[in-house]
Amino acid sequence: MPRINLPKLTESVFPLILLLSGIFFILLYVEYRASKDAETTYYIHITAKSSVNIQDEEQSNSVMEVDFSSDPRVIKAQKLIEEKEYAKAEVIYFTILAEEPSAQIHNWLGTLYLKEKLYTKALVSFSNALKLNPDYYRARYNRALIYSMLDEHEKAIRDYKAVITGFENHAKSHFNMGVLYYQKKEYALAIAAFKRTSEISSGEKKIKALYLLGRSQMKIEPAQNEAARESFEKVIRLKPDHIASRLALVDMAFAKSEAGEKQRLEEYALMLEMEPANIAIYSAMYEAYHALGQEKAAKAIIQKALLHEPNNISMRFALVQTLIRLKQYSEAISQLQKILIIAPENTKAYFLLGRANYLKGSYTEALSVYEKVMDLTSRPRPELWNNIGLLYSKMERFDEAHNAYMQALALRSEYPEVYYNLGVLMLKQKVYEEAASYFNKAVSQRGSYRQAYYNLGLVYAKLGRNKDAIKAYQRVLELDPDNIRVQLNLAVRYSKVGELSRAQKLYETILEGDSTYYTAWLNLGLVYQEQKAYNKAIEALNKAVELEPESKKAHRSLAKNYSLNGDYKAATAILYKLLAQDPADIKTRLAYARSYYRAKKRNTALREYKKVLKLNPDNKVALKMIEKIETKKRNKNVKQ
Image (cartoon, rainbow, N blue to C red; front, side, top):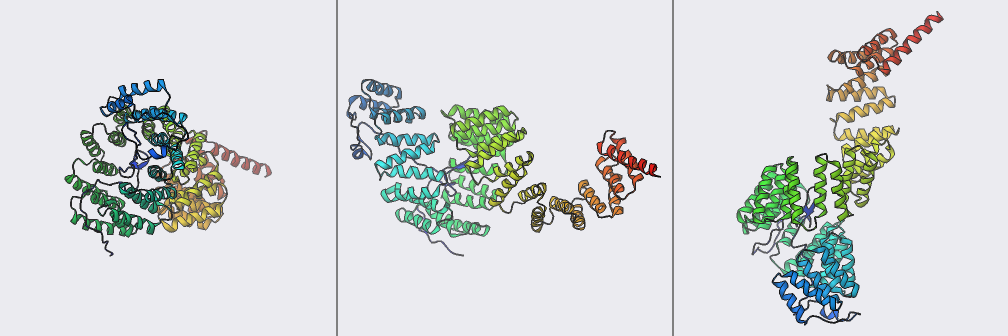
């Protein structure tokens, strides 16, 4: 197999467990992967003693105002901020603003609030600065950062673009905008942003931009693998021990297949021999084992990594995720408690602690944990409200679940997972029209949302909107062509609208792939029955009976087709055996009587229908057939 020749590793670096797969971190219902390296954002924090990066550009602002940089009060305020005396610094800024409105002071006030993590107040301050001076790009850049923190990504991008319009070479705006595009999976735009950042920056920022450029080039469809390889090689030329790029090159060298993952593991093992304490290599091995579905091996490799760095929180989080996948929830909870000893206010740990308790079925404990997260955060993230909604839904506290989901949407209107969960909530309560509305909203925000399309098909079927159900299932199959369950549901809907040949073809396709699928054989037999192809129906239903010998429905359907085909003896024999097992089965008794009726044995049929009435005196079918048979007998006697 090919060998990857890379320079020898020289140092252990911060673990990049999830960087190999993206930037988001996995939350309760939706996966979000996190990377400190990738998500680094830059603050323009202007001090009294120095300016940062765009001082010369600021001088070209169309609106001139007093520069407070050397004002003794500002110098004092900055010193108070360094000493974390934020309230006193705030008073100084407000005193200055009372004397003279200043975009510069509003900007500094915003950075003060940002340090205190008072993001809403910071947003107001930066916006006030821009009202006074729309061309004050420091405030606009800082406001973009706040919008990003508040998940207002489109507004953040709009502000970054405004900065770039004024200062085309503002590398930090290009970079941060690239990160947002990457998070939104808009890889073409991310590529443009990271490429421009790499062209106009140097040092660590250039390295980060090139690395994320490579990741974006790998993720775009179709993948730009050759360009990605060049990007990673540029990183390595700038920083030979850049572990993430080295691992990315190994990742690209092999196919995304079982064989490819095994080859990656061989390469990682060789790298680990040279650097036995390098956590990033353990992380890559963990990802490969996870891709192979070998969760126990993934667990073991993380545990080995933790022997080298027991306080590595990122690795402990990876271990927690693995334990959750292994359904070892108590052990996951134990690991999260260890993380909280290391980092007592780690909201991510509390978040996962809530998830683990939820999955364990400890709903009260999960709710208590989420309340703790609420206490720790000044502005709860929409993912938290989503998780609370899931929890309430599981507890069948539907109104509270609905309220929680709406809280999530108030914070992030573009949140397809929440609309999906609202759809599920309505489906549970059999409010099908509202369920359909929410599922439609989910797919409008994410056109590839397979499960939402699938549930949309289910809801439309419940509403009797078979043509709409067909469209939903067809869309699922565009995204997942080999999904047998969806093929089956689509075939059922075809039958409902009379498209029997299409239903037949689908069932036959399913059975070509899995000849042991009982339901497909049963339904195929019923389609043949509708087409009056009784011999084919009997053949298919005999297969169904072989697969599910205890299925009364299959036996009754088989008997019916024998009867329709004129083989009344075979039909009554099958039904007789069923009645011997369960004499009180009304459906089988009705079928037994009907079989005799078709065979023109009306007296026997009449006797069997009367037996049905002994079991259920109000049975409408039996009453109708008895009336019909007796009327015919009376009419016959009259004629005689």
